[in-house]
Length: 157
Image (tube, rainbow, N blue to C red; front, top):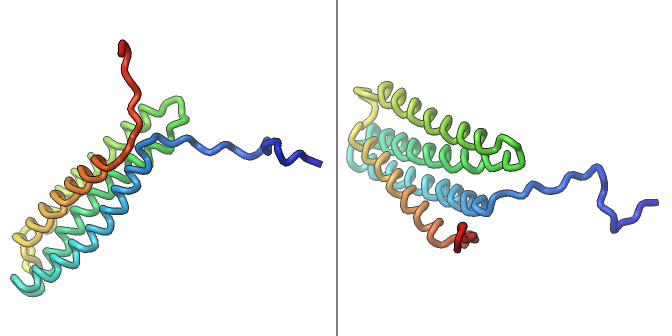
């Protein structure tokens, strides 16, 4: 019979995530919520400004901005899962840098594919992207400002 106070030798201990992980997850949740609100708002604004092409431009623009936010925050949160790996720093930066390169390529390809399309309003598309990026920066600033991450003093303090 096994002693209930003794840990199960097969059971692995929980991975100690960085203290920034809850902050990243909060930013991710807020980013998804605000992206959904922006998509709805810019769909309406686009429709009022230029009909169906405006609606399509507003939805695609704000969705692109939200996707880029989720990709950045999600890549950092995902990379934190490798914290116990001996090559954590290399994996972390490879994942995050890889997501930034992926974002850049997706943005360029999407911009080239959507350029001069008669079925969307490029002005509403651009304004939607800019609005989504600005809102994501505000979300990041607010979430970071309200977070309580412990700070450890440096050498010589």
